[in-house]
Image (cartoon, rainbow, N blue to C red; front, side, top):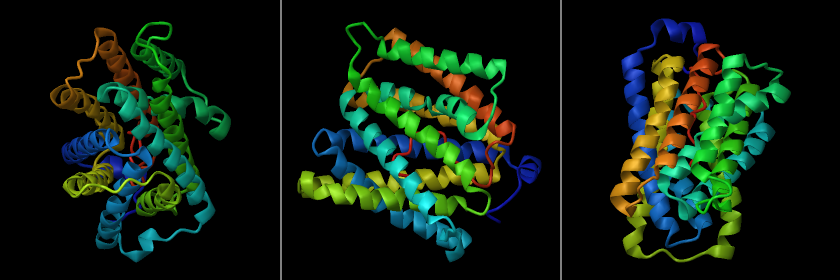
Length: 312
């Protein structure tokens, strides 16, 4: 299947059911990656967990790209732009993994899923876009969902909520810069550099925090990378064969899986206000994701997935 297809072509010949299936499968794999990262983050430095996550994900991403689109799909005419995006991806990944060690899995996921809200706001100065009234309402309500989860001024509030919020901001910038790169940059090149650059940058920090992994924990490090790489591949395929405006909102099924795994593994039971906040964020973020793709602001052939970048 050709890498570059127009939005019109995708809307015409996309397969919604298959696209949704790939998206849901990818989001499930991504949540498994988060589970591994949260568990490993309790035993090892966040920097080390992130490094191995990308180390084992990168070969899978490269292998799939070469098999599907060939070597030219990994080339770029704008290496400096990708390095800049790599810095954003590094910030997003480390802050997300840090949040996993400080907060329940479902709460971290919910707050980080506010990235489309930041896209709406940041697109005003960076792209000159003007949100409509409904988009403004969705954006304001979505940030209200954050307040329901973090509850500033309450006993449950802590600065830990700033970690996934930083992830959302950085990932919003990643989505916007993906638009700026242009059609000549393939999704495979975008994924490759957004993984390879953070791998190098985080690797430079590794000697300062290194803790030799126990042999019994190596499968979890490997599993984190493999599930993360597989997730990105499945989600990308979902956008390539499906209708973007239909596929994108299903990214929020990750909130369900985060809640389920948080309960099963760590006995994390979200409070009613946290559940309400997560629902508000999912509804508002899902609407914004739908409106952005429906209006052609994100090419189905070159998707920028809406979840936090766990080293994609």
